[in-house]
Image 1 (tube, rainbow, N blue to C red):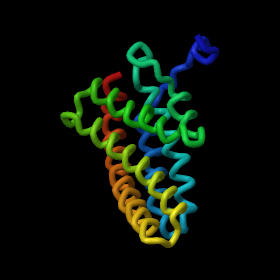
Image 2 (cartoon, rainbow, N blue to C red):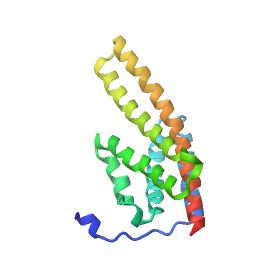
Image 3 (cartoon, one colour):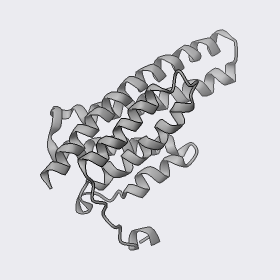
Length: 173
């Protein structure tokens, strides 16, 4: 057993109002990312991590080995964070799906597509940088932009549905 698993996690009592406020600020900072040349994206990432932490707190501890801190904290480990996004975001989609049967598999598949787009985007950016201005570099640059746009769309859709499920779970309590 690891030390963090021996320390009891204190459950956070969430209210719908608190969750909606965080979601509003996430949405606003994401919308401001383009006109502020990416500065809003930093705030959006912070609010995303706060929401992800709170979403994982809604999962009963006896149904998962994932803790909220682990779900968010491991995302910040370089390179490993790409893998961990599947465990954290797609895993949350699977957990929410099993708890609510919301959307007949929609949560699980949308969160998976978001994670795949993120991994493809990171890989394409790496190869675009390696091959520079060559035809191959331009090809991977195009793949990067397509995966980034697709990932952003699925990120937004996933978060909207996560928020809806989180509200349902809070109302059930």
